Image 1 (spheres, each protein chain N blue to C red):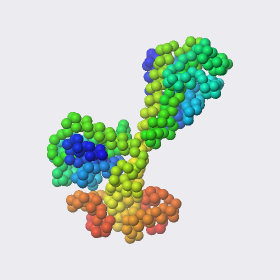
Image 2 (cartoon, chains in turn green, red):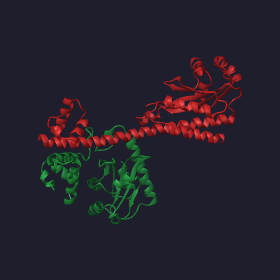
Image 3 (tube, rainbow over the protein chains, first blue to last red):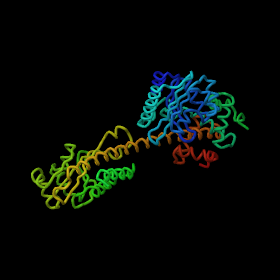
Length: 208
Length: 249
């Protein structure tokens, strides 16, 4: 809902809300369009990007021209540009010292948000935060939080477990190799994970 | 230090001392003794809270004055109940007491109380930290200040204490909201991390036992029942030591 309003009112082409933890855990709570979904997954794959930064710094991240952000997020800037991203704005979802994640707004053309748009975006981020904090029934927030608790990135975590077991490596190592493979082959992380799950992609592919 | 400054210092001290998990009575006892020190002429403070329509004394700096509250609960009249009902400050001296609430005035006579001041309080219900609906459920109560002096609590003092209790009410409300938000966040983040751990454990089980995704989950469910461990605890064990999957559970 918040994402749809964002796309409608703020002249952006995609919006997404992700919840994060200080670790690598991330979940897609709401997203408007598959394009924004791919960009969220890209941040999940790389562990860098505007949403990650808005979360860790607890401040807004406003990038009117993505090409300026190459030093900041080398991987994300390049891959997101290939996806057609030109400008991105991320607002942290927070209340006081409580940090939850970020609202990411994606735009296909360069240019900043006007003061008014920025104020609207901040209100939307607040709305999303309130919704997350007051919602006590976990299965109503979004499609990724179904009744059995399966998350949007579940397949990735299953694949990480499989790789760790097959290759006798640590979970952290397995996570890195899966992400590195996705990034180096330019394949979405979820697709790679699915290939591992269905055993189309053997663990050998992830050997050093 | 002037009176207003003293009051705001006291308020700041109490604010800093609030712990979200402490029982309401503990905090109110602290408030009561702070008010006694803060207010000239105040010899004792009792705190009334209305729970399920019934008023109760939940804190008292002087146990011997609790009968002053109790006679009001029994007879249904008195300065504290008036303050509750009208949501305004009620100040009474000996002559007013005898005229307005004779039964209460008799007890006041016995205890030696000559002036009373009752300030309404609005607090969130205890344990209301779980949902927004519960937060809207507020408790009402009153802070009762007692003096053995005639003509205590000048209007300026009384106003100051009214401001104090009203500020305190909102501070406690905010603290409760904050605690609710923090709890919700914790649950959200724990759920996120737990879910990832279970998924990863599923992947490990799939490889060790050559199972599909759903079968692996069933394996975890069975193992959880067999070993009397929660699935999420089992998942963490497996992640820490995948060999656990080979029967060492």
